[in-house]
Structure formats: structure tokens, C-alpha cells
Length: 603
Image 1 (tube, helix red, strand yellow):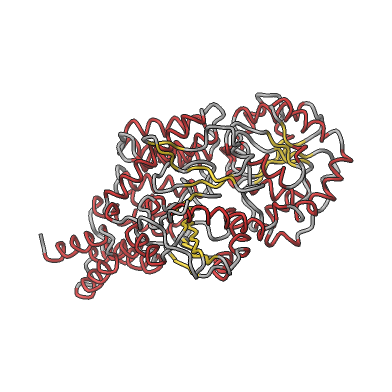
Image 2 (cartoon, one colour):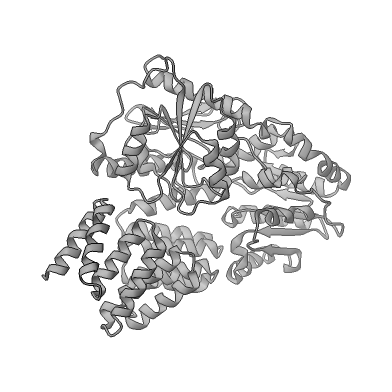
């Protein structure tokens, strides 16, 4: 092996071990000595990309392609595919697609290029092509979870929901139970009415144990929190919030009022922000926090150490099993008291997390489910805060006019994740539409920008007697205000089940639109009931599918009642606990103090 190749190998070993700064230093010195070595330049680009320096990475990856212009196909395909990955990271998915296709021109059997092409086409709303490319990746590398995840995602976005779950299960069989696919399955089960809640929680316990084993096996096992939490004599309780969503995201609309509302005489707030592209919302949240850790690009060891240096008393995960979570860090227990809250509608199953924050509607006290038990010990015990477990901040929507409903007739609306609209929901909504002649249904989600999705949804409704002319499917809008503005012409919002909306329900109520919700048999299916109760409109909650349909039909036949809601709902909501950030912060503070006291041995 040449000295250059050996130097590259050593640098990449450093990067793999999380020593990114040392790896970059070694590769920069190597490129300075050999500026025309395509391999050295390329690997410098890869490590820059891994560290989040996308623009610099693009420069070096482009340069490596130019330097290797006459290289053979087997060597050239990876260079082009990695350039495509960097372009995708920069947000240029059309450019990424060109590079992935160039890589496949060089080597049609290069699986990473098929996978990259699938992701690029998904972002470009070409789901049929994405499915084809992802399937090809799974054929070429059946033991690689990446292809199965891409396939399942593209199928879900194309509203081929059963096939999506089948792809996850097949991938699990082919990869010997890959952890990422297991996580995808636990998330997908939230959307399935037939999923047994107890079995679902058992599956969470399984993935939580896998996360913990991986985290502690990687070196975190030697890092344990103090046997007791630090005492509070003469100081404030230090709370840490960990999230990849401290940006223009639904989670920020709920945690923002809490961070701003905390009593700084009692607590101080540390935000651990895993946001790769900070925005105006990030800046506003940062200004509200006492301390800030920018964790984007940090490996788990580095972030674990950074959190420990802050000596956080209560560390709160806001992501659960959603994208960008840092559950691997939570498993290392960098704080003595740890909880999960807000961003995920269920348990995480991670042993290092001791509590889950809910309320008595989402998780009734007389119900045994809602916790995970392992070895006789309860993990993630439920902490039920009084009233609703969340509060909503309208932010820039505060001044958006309510407007008046469409004068041409009753318009039902559903704005949110299309995968929540399973077969049972389509059945119920179709019956509602059939019983309200002349009514229409507006569906809004970014996936409706794709012809494949619109075709699948229209076909499902047509099979139940609802012609396409009664459906309006809207895709992405440029601004949040424009997105919510669609509600100005909606008469009644239909909440999906078994996985209710949260942000979409709050936005509808803020815009004066009544929301009909079904009280379900699990946390995700009771969030709507909690929100509507907190907003003072429990009459909009149904106890069965039949009652849900009757409520929606009854409202549609009572335009005066709908108009009254249009006038009164915003004021009622603004005056309710649902928009009381200070009150929510106090309720959470009491919960955090109790957690800390128990961790300190005072309970």
C-alpha cells in the first residue's frame, strides 16, 4: 500500500472513531502535499460532509471528479454518487439526481447510486421512480437496510401503506432485524388501527434495549450519572431539552412557549439543538434559553460529554423515535433524571429514560398500558401533568385573519400526514361525504404534489362511491401562513384515527374551524380529545366511529353552528390552558422538581 493510501486509511479510521478534527487536519495536510490526488481530495470532501461543512465538501468532491475525469467506471461511480449525496445535503435534489444517474451510467450495478436516486426522486415527488430505484437497491444489496428504508418511505408517500409495512417486514427478515428497520416498524404501527397497543409497547422495549446495548457497548457503559442528583440548595433546577426540531417545525410551536414561560427564579434552561440548518425560529428559541449546545454533527460520545459538562438535572428528549433523535445519548444517561416529552406519541423503550410526560386524557390513570416494564422494573413511568400535556403558540399566525368558510357549500378538510389516512379513515370520511350531498373534501400534505399519491387516494375514494370532483388534494405551500390559510375556506376539519393530529388540530381551532375527533384506545388516538377538552369544546369528541360520522354530518347540516364556531373559537382557545405557555411551564416545572427529588433520593 502506498504512503498516500495508508495516510487516507488512517485518516478515515480517525473519522470513523469520531475524531473528525484530527481526520480533517490529516487529510488537509495530505491534499496540500498532493493537490492532484483525486482519492485524497475525495476523502477530504467526505469527512467535510460528515462534519456538516457542506459547501467545502462540495468543492472538494467536485474537484475529485474533475481530477478523475478519465478514471475507470468502477472507480468513477462512487465519486459521482458521493457528489450526489453532498448535493442532496445542500438541498439541490435535481443536481443530486443528475450525479446519481451519471454514476449509474458509469456502473449500472452500483447500489449506492440506485439508493441515492431513490432519495432524490422522493424529494422531487417522483414516487414511482423512487420505488423502482429503491427496489433495485434491495436486489443488489438485500442485507443493507438503506434500500428497504427508502422503499418503505417511497411506498408510504405514494399512499401504498400496506406495501410500505410489508417492505419494512421483508427488510427486517433480510437484514436479521436491523435496528433502523425495527424503528421504522414501531413508527409505522402508530398509523395502524389493527396494531395491538400492548404488542406495540413490547416492540418499543425491544428497540430501546437495542439502542442501549449499542450505546453502552460503544464505550458509554463506563459513563454513569451520579448515584444521586445534585442538591438544589442555593441554586436553580437546570433543565435540558434535546431536539432536532428547534426550528420551523411543529415541535417548536409547542416547546417555544414553554421555554419562554419558565420561571427563571426557579429553573434555567439548556437547549441541545441538533439542527443542521438553523433558521429564524432557531434564533428565537436560542434567545429564550439560558444556555445552548449546538449538537449538529456531534457524535454520541462528544455530545454525551458536552451534556455532562453542563451538569443538567433533568434531561428531556423531545423527539422519541422520530428522525434526528439522540436516543443513543439518552441511553448513556448523561443526567440522573431523564424524561421523554412532546415529539413522539408513545414510549421510547430506552432504559435510560425514566419518565414520559402525558395527561389523564391521553393516558387514563386506570389504564395499565403506557409504561414499559423490563425485569420487573418499570421504565418510563407516566407523569400526568394537570390539564392538557401540551400548549400551543400561534406565533406568526397570531395576526392571520380567520376569514369565512367557502360560501359554495360544506368543505371538510384534513391537513397533515397522509399516512394517517388509512382504510378505516377513508371508509368513515366516504360515509360522511355520501350523507352530505354537495360537500367536498380538501386534503393537504406535501405528498399530494405527486401524481402517484393523488391517483392512489382518488382510487380509494372512488371505490367507496366518491367521485374525484369532490376531492381537492393540495401539496406544498411556500409559507406556513399560506399553508394554514387554506383553512379559511374549510367548514369542518376531520381528525384522522387511530393517530390524531396535534399541530393541525390547534391550527384549525385557531382559524375558527371545528375539529371532529375520535377518542381512541392509545395515546396517539387520544391527543385530539385532550386538545379539544383543553380548548373548551369537548362536544366535538366522539366515542365511536359511528358517533364520529354523526357528529361530522350533524355539523355539516347546521351551518349556523359552524358559523358560530368560526366567530368564537379563536378567542376561546386563546383564553384557554391550551395557549397558556406560562401555566404549562409551571406544571412541567413541578413535574421536573419531583423527578429531580426522586433522583436525588429525597423521595
